[in-house]
Length: 244
Image (cartoon, rainbow, N blue to C red; front, side):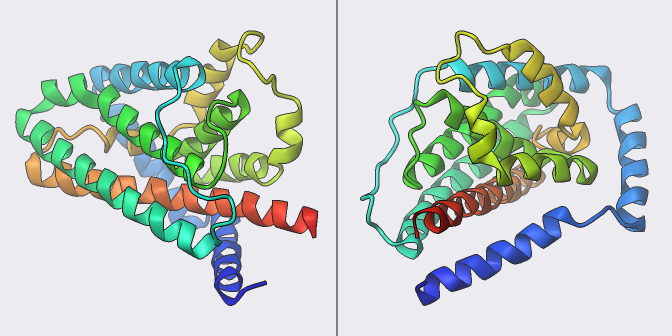
């Protein structure tokens, strides 16, 4: 294994330990606070988040594939990830500008644009997946992307269940249809929505000012891209191990 790959593998291992860590006293305390936050979040926010998730799930599973950049199949992992990082920075800038504009527009504009914010982040995931060499026209790859998004925005308790699916993706994918015609997406999206942490997702709605909206969207885009990086690294090393 090349030195760059050894470093990437070490980083992945450290990330997995962090993701799988059992909720400690602070996490349980934080969860209690989040439940209280959920209780005081207006119903309109809950409805906006729920509607946006449903729209996002259906759009990802059945929408037409974006035009995504392709990288040479033999490009080393380190160089591949440098190119991906450059592309992520572009999305961060886009999200930051959108967050500033919408945040300045107030709560109504924030609600109206929330589905668009999710669409931008899913577009970023499509590009990341494609640049890692995966066929985003494949229905199973789209479900994987949804699990990546889910992992980024699920609670600590739910993360362990989601990462188990991602770690064992080759086996999980065998039970999925190649096309979406026979897939019960409505049941999937209900279960999917239940895994999401509404308090975290609500942070994506830039309703508390231009400055905060810009910073929050930059950070959350970075968090999603970072989660995707490790998920696709996991598949990269699983595949590498399988063929050696």
